[in-house]
Length: 322
Ligand code: F6P
Ligand code: MN
Image (cartoon, rainbow, N blue to C red; front, side, top):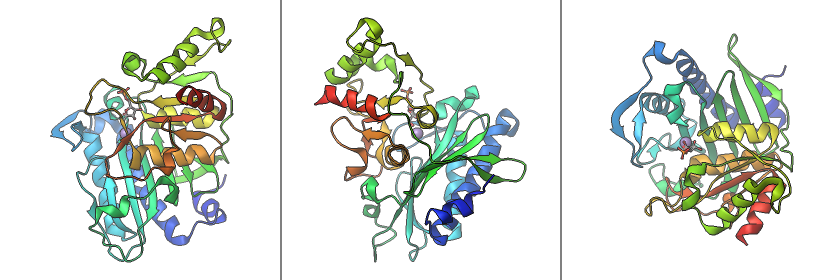
């Protein structure tokens, strides 16, 4: 089986970008180890703190963030980082080329129940001559990502990665510490009968999503004339991994549950990297009204509606929005 470095060099990835990706993966290997140790390493449970988004931080959120932050700032490949667990961007090497946005531990409500969690990351280039302390260097649409990926800490630790030449999936060989290519050029089937949504929010959705899902639930007796199955892991990284490997429809749509928070998922370090992985595997990623990677961000913790997955099914959903 092929190791990650030669595969990425073949994809035209520069040695500089490869070094940065390997740096991120070094932290992810340690996170994988800690997650795997669970209660034995004393990392389960919550801290007494909240992040800037008002979410209670789990011990593993804080630990994962610290591991990624330390290694990224120490190795000098990044000009600045933006993290779900950091209130503001953090400056790195002023002469570095890249900036990294990341969700250190996605799906953290799954930590204490020994279920799926993962790390999501997005890499862009900082504008030429820009200031490492200026958060506006992150205000670039997802189309500017030079690489995006996630590491899923499941029964095996897997990496989905794209440098813009397709989406490749690797599995961590925990004996030797290498990510080995196990699923080349993932291709999401255009058609699917599986959807992933937090159905408890159904009554708070906008009419378009309500109507679309009502027709899915009506199954073969409804206008779709076929039955659909539902899955919800409650970790985007787990749900997107299923979509990448066997197809599917995933959405966290707008809702009116909390008028101050119409959307749940964050653009820079959740929606954009997942959108790139999905598009590079032949799928679609939209908000319902626009392509996710075309959005011009205006804040580092900005949230968006997300609808992604198998091409035909996402297009059907979008037709309810038009
Ligand atoms: O990071 C936000 C997140 O945990 C996603 O990973 C996941 O898809 C979603 O929130 C789960 O939301 P809920 O708790 O509403 O099921
Ligand atoms: Mn998350």
